[in-house]
Length: 449
Image 1 (cartoon, one colour):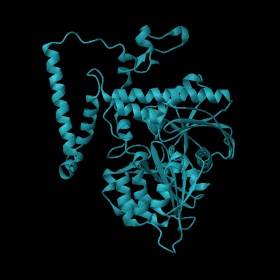
Image 2 (cartoon, rainbow, N blue to C red):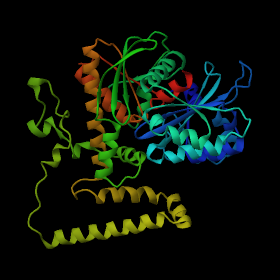
Image 3 (tube, rainbow, N blue to C red):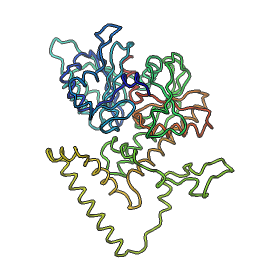
Image 4 (spheres, one colour):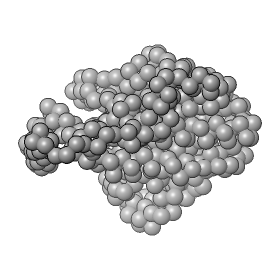
């Protein structure tokens, strides 16, 4: 991917970053904040001002963190390439990039909207309520939650609240990234693999005149916006099948408690055990229509092909007993993980992840497992969005399609599925374009408006 990019964009686990931020005291320097509160996630942004010379700007927050806590060097730091000595899937909790146009380093954090109180506590604990006579700080807010939680944000934080239009913020944020940030926009080559995705990314240089284009913003739902110029845009389409659909169905089908847990499952999943392919129907390629045997014919289609079990036998009874005992053991392990000292020790050995995966599988038939179901679900949603996006781009004669939103989260499987769908339906004539900061367009737009 290149050293320059890795130096500019770093990912840090949220709790670790906050702990170290308290030590280096950089949060107090922001005069105003921006938040984008969607149906599933709330994102926050502030800019750490640059007090260095133009030739030697202030070092990134990550440099200060590394100096403040050397332990992070081996366990908690995750590069934009998605590799680390620790868990390489906790990668969108914190983002930073330096921008001369913003006058410093932009920092991003995300919270689940259902726990909006966490966001409020975060703001109050790190910026504090203004005292009498202090300069009143501004909170620029966008997204549906900016209006839904307006009273909570204004009264509990003491900030002056300024609510902004969601679509306008998303478009402004994207236009800024396209024009001013290096190594931001990329496409992926055919065969983009999860395990080696970074090497197949092709980055594009900044573009001051990217118009016209289609922005596909994937949050809880999907909005498709035709952008023809600066502050010239129209919402041309959308879909109720988006990130909220994926997360909602995943919670019903698995025992996962957070979005990240579901994404973690998809890194190890194989959707071929769940999806019905052309080859499952025809025994090979459908050459007359040009359909490869590996093309998905029906998402979750193999569930309907499952053979019913024969009448109960001793062997089946034994399997069910073992399954019940394993489930009980996992439930007790989950209880132990919730205890302060024992839970910390078990998490240190990775027991929590194995327990979550085991509990997720308890919700499913013995013939399927949670990681395969999660992968199939992810691809089903991604394929659907990619197809609708291409059809809209074709309808309005738009040469470029940019995909953004916290559903993507720079996740290789999501990116690969969307790119495949666009390439498939366009016959290879249209290319899907993605962003490193795909989930923060609204926050960035609210900040710069």
